[in-house]
Length: 177
Ligand code: C2R
Image (cartoon, rainbow, N blue to C red):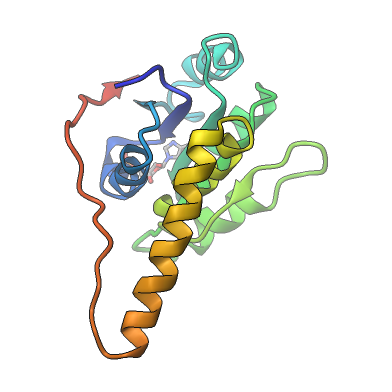
């Protein structure tokens, strides 16, 4: 896999299933990523180390995935100038509204671009779009992707079912902490 441009950080390994949705998209676009389990609550020092060094390590966008009292994306955004995309996780107790509000209601000056509850695929597409401003080959792939979406939607309208190919090659081990 190429040099990671996207850092995917999740609050717990229990978020992994949702994170998989982002990885499928990034692999589809051939974008290198790294993934880590880090928690602003449980491992705050490691979150600081990760976020404050992300830029110099070559990352260009961070996707931060967290549920419940989801402070991780905001804390990461406080330690980096890289764009941070937050993914709220659905929760059994409050349905994910807890996660959503924790991520989206950032104070002025420290934005986190927040996607839908469990919206990891959209987070990855947004990350890809941010990268597309710098990398023309990624932008070209995004144009084809839009075309695929339009064709799939037209086929649905005519009663056909079309699933764009999102399967991929290799799986990388997840790094804890
Ligand atoms: P466990 O399943 O490990 O108890 O975690 C995780 O993202 C997960 O969705 C339950 C939920 O807690 C979240 N978590 C956060 C943070 N750390 C863990 N929201 C954080 O620092 O914001």
